Structure formats: C-alpha cells, structure tokens
Image 1: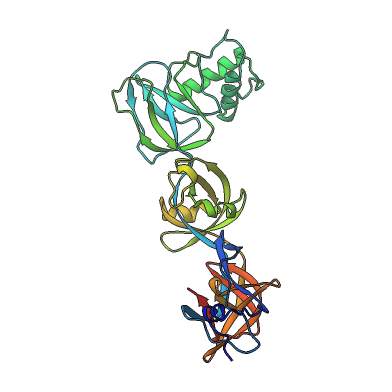
Image 2: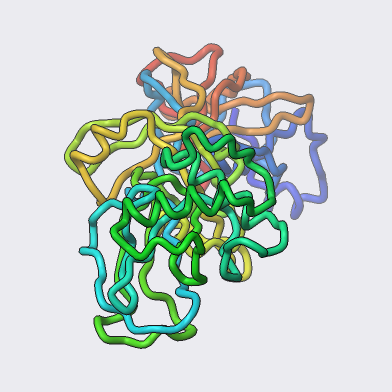
Length: 375
C-alpha cells in the first residue's frame, strides 16, 4: 500500500512515525574527487513495501565502464624563462642578433659602438670596469670562472677567487685577442652581459639599430629548452605538486612526459611564455611550469598549444551512477533508489572512486538498472 501524501496525513490530524529517513546527497566534485556536503531535504518515508517513484524525479541508467580522476588542463609550449637584457654604459647599438638565434657563453650577444657585447654565465650583473688595481669582489670571481670555462687561463695558475691578479689580466688579453678586439687586459663596463644560463635563445628585440643605450632593455632572451606552462583553475591546484609527473599532449598528436618544476602564485605566464585556462582568487593566477623529458620531440612541435594531463586514480569494469543519485542514509552510508517497474526499492551501496560528477558503487545493483535522480 502506498503511503498517504504528507498533506493528507497532516489534515487528518495524525502523523505516522517515520521508520527511516533517506536524504539526497549533494556532492561537489573538486580536484577529481568529491566531498559529501550533507543533506538538502528529507526524502519520502520508507515503508515496509516497495514505493512508487516520487513525482518530479528523473532517472539514469547504471553504467559499466571505467572512471578516472585524471584532469586535463590547456596550456602552451614556450621557451623557458624569458629575461630582459639591460645594457650598461653608454653608446649606440650597432648590431643585433636575429630572433630565434642561439648564443652560447662566450659568444657575441649584440654590438655597441662596433664592439661586441659578450654573454657570460653569472647570477649578478657587472657594475664596474674590471682590471688591475680594482678591489676584490664577487664580480671578479664570476669573470675568472668564465675565463677558466672558455679556456683562456691555461698555464697561468689562476685561482677562481675574488682577486684581480696579473694572471687575470693576461687571461683577459687572451680572451680579447680571440674576440678580435684591442687587448687591454681590462673588461670595460657594458662589454659583458652576465646571465644564469650557459646558452640563450633570442626571444625578441627591444632596441633598434642606431638606438642609444638607455634605461630600456636591448633585447629579451630565453632558455634554449621548451617547457609547458599552464595556469590551472583554483580548484585544480592541489593536483599540481612540485616534482609531480604529468603527460603533455602536443598539438601534432604525440605526447611527452614531464615534471612540475615550479608553481608561482600571481604569475602572468611569462616564465615560460604564457599559459591558458584558470584563474586564482582575486584575479591572481598560479603559473605552473613543467620541464619536458624529450626536447627533441618538443622541438618538432615548437611553441604551440598543448594539453597537460595529471594522472589520478582509475577504476575499471566499474558500476557508475551520477553523484546526484546517491542518498545519505540516516544510519550512515549511502544508497540509491532503483526503479522496479512502477515502484522503487532502496539499495544500500558502497562508494568507490568519485570523479567528473560520477561515482563508482557496489551493491545489489547491476548494469542497466535505472536509479532515481532528484530534480
């Protein structure tokens, strides 16, 4: 016998004791998983006999298949870490490299007043002329380290320290001879650019031939390796962890494995040339930079759009229902209402993987059964 409608029971002045309450469960799927938020409204009382499906409710079929909590985020392949190069000293720009060219440490980056400005490896810019009589300092040590790496100190017994010695001046003259410039033994301010990379790629030009040196950059360089850059949505960030492994799907269809190098809050995407999709709270975005295992494959694709996949848990051969079909039982656990002709039966189920608004369940249900969906 069907229970009387609630309105009629109230008007008759009697109120039957509810034996069991089933509450629809609202799940919010976040970061490939789900969190049960709790009950939203009471369900009809469950009597001792099968119930008719309530009006205003739909249904969905129980599916059998695979479920994965992996996520996909759109991003871009770009050359690593664009850096503006500021010029020191005075003069006129007389030569610039082509965009896309690569310059190694010891090579000519650009030219001022007909003299080459050379790339060297270091973490701090030079701020003075370096020659005999100059005080000791870390800039001298950087210079000496480069002269050793470029092979100009052989037989001089030079220690890589902060002192500019006569042997250092001799090494500088050897370096100047190799460049084809006047051999003074002194490194004038502005003749060397110190950058952390041992090789750079010319990203873009800011100055023009004939421009006087000023406060603006001459050019922008990047690393020679391609990286993947993404800006995930706020609710995806917990899936991106430093050193975490990802799979990058290239625009031409192949894939490259990668590793998360950094997450920078408030990044504008310029660390690796730009990212897509996602925003942080208050307009702040988090830029995720991923180093790639196969540069040869990445270079074949070149700077382009990519899709970055973060692998999560996977369930195969699973029974799957929409999360909106799940009901929180007052005694704990979850259930679904299975349609049985014109009636329903409540089935307690065990919850497995939850992803993409779908849930894996086990219990007295089978593929093809239809479950009630509250609307």
